[in-house]
Image 1 (cartoon, rainbow, N blue to C red):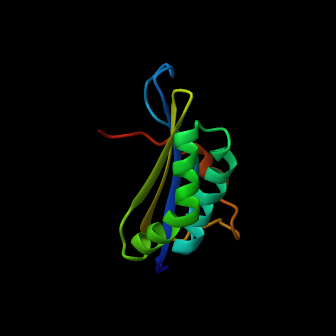
Image 2: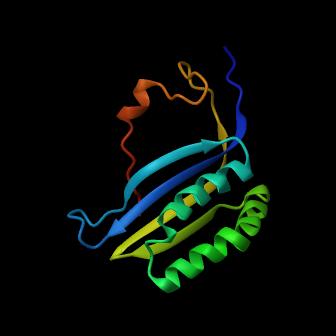
Image 3: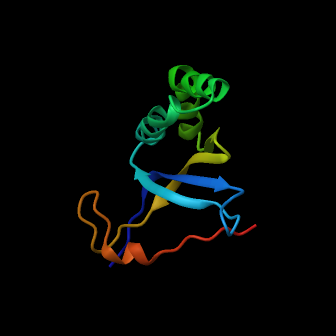
Length: 127
């Protein structure tokens, strides 16, 4: 069987806190977007959710990205550049990333539901 790849965008949301026992970033969510606008929309929905809880300067920066920065981020992704956006709140850094990738089809995937074996994946950072 020949596996065909498809262009997509891999998005992640990480948190970092000095108070976390391991000191390592924690992966909170991941998403495979089918287009650059969809990847940016995934980040925007999450950022809009936390923007009102941020300190005034962080909140202003978040709303600036939501109103003006999204276009630049979308263009960068379309130009095959990875993107990241971070905000800080109460000692926690939240970072959203998106990057262009080639996706292989998953054997048991149906629509947007991932197969149960995906739950076994434990990401690690290599520094």
